[in-house]
Figure 1 (tube, rainbow, N blue to C red):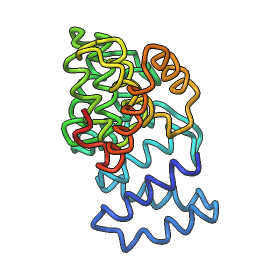
Figure 2: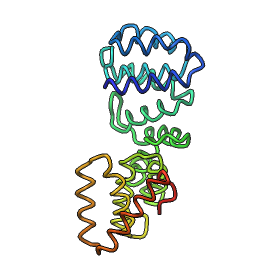
Figure 3: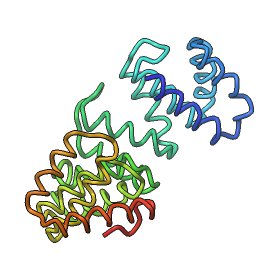
Length: 231
């Protein structure tokens, strides 16, 4: 939880026009002075600063320095999202998609995911891909799912890389290719996920030693290219 808020405060610090005034906020956070963090962030949020509104929303969502309150989280995230703040749009989509603090609404989730995804938010691109794959709030479409998952995978989102591996392993939305499936599983497995490793092991049973070697080489090349144009 500490890392979550520290990351979002730093993103505010370096993206906001008022960053010079926020050094004390980071210092207060590192010192565990959540009261000061809350007071300062709320001040900026009430002045309409979208990054601060997003941070305040996440503080309420995760109960960081304040009593956890989904209603307040939704309020502040919406204010930021309506100003085009991509991360706020993503988190607002998550709340609607899971029914966290609000009635579950896939179409509303889809709306916010799409807005954030079009701005290049990797988490939103992954979520949009999953919604297209499952037909949540939209007609099931594996080709669109593959498009958004690939964009997220190219940003290093390991869950998107794993899902691409699954699509190639099963021929969903793409031509079945165990080599490419193994490649994406290899890349996704770098985060240590046992589920990814198990899926890779299933694909291995369908492959020759030459195919496995090729997949491993493709994975190394893909990582060197920062996940761009990998298949």
